[in-house]
Amino acid sequence: MRSYQQISVSPIAGALGAEVSGVHLGQLDDAAFDEIRTAFIDHQVLFFRGQEITRDQHKAFGRRFGTLQIHPYLQPLKEEGHPEFVVLQSDAQHPFVAEAWHSDVTFMNEPPLGSILRCVVGPEFGGDTMWASMYAAYDALSGKMQRLLSDLVAIHDTVRSFSRADYKIEHIGGKRAEEVMSAEHPVVRTHPESGRKGLFVNSIFTASIKGMKPAESSALLNFLYRHVETPDFSCRFRWRENSIAMWDNRCTQHRVVADNLAANRRMERVTINGDRPV
Image (cartoon, rainbow, N blue to C red; front, top):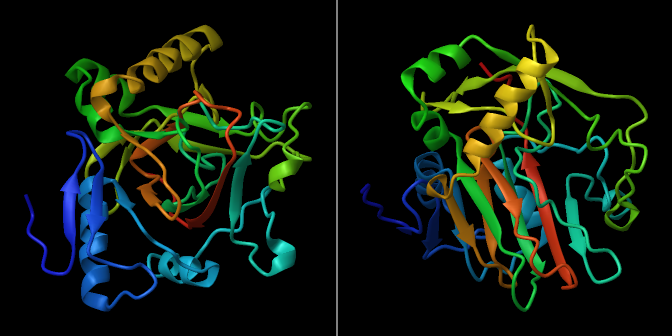
């Protein structure tokens, strides 16, 4: 276990995830931020409680990691001067949650580094979010499977999400993609900071394996999607108002537990721009 001087870090699961205390994200000095960044690389997803911060403080914290993404289809707070925010909101009339395992926005050439999500209104119960380590998923494969995947490239696109004819999420400020966006990424990605290898395919945005016949591609991807769901690779977080989760999109996937769709739930997220996967 690494020792910290400015913050307290308590792992919550074996594969990934840690709760950080002793700090307010709106009032960070450089020493505390440096330790948070170290913990972020070590634990892949960090959780903070009791973070009553403004939207400007939320963005300022994100910008310490890099520039902020403006989502191509989700900009609900643009007219309020905050185009960087994605709002994830659901209730009994609009029971919308992202209940499939995924990494964010992998249909872009440079997918996000990560995201910082704050709970504005949390459900009384249920609606937890889970994260899975793609390092752990890769490490659990046999050597032969790792070698098979090592040179493969996957095509990611918006066909099953933002480009669907029935894709309507106006209640969270979303719009349908007028044209399909796509990108190609390695099936096994090397993290640019940790140097570790992890799987980089997900069930929402990965369409196929380049150069494989459709049946071959589907069989391999479906195996990997089921493999990623292995409980041993995951952690789970229960939301409360002013809780914050930040995750590394380069080496994790996440999903909401869809066990209380009628609950009133509002999350606000900023996303940090990343680099091209290798």
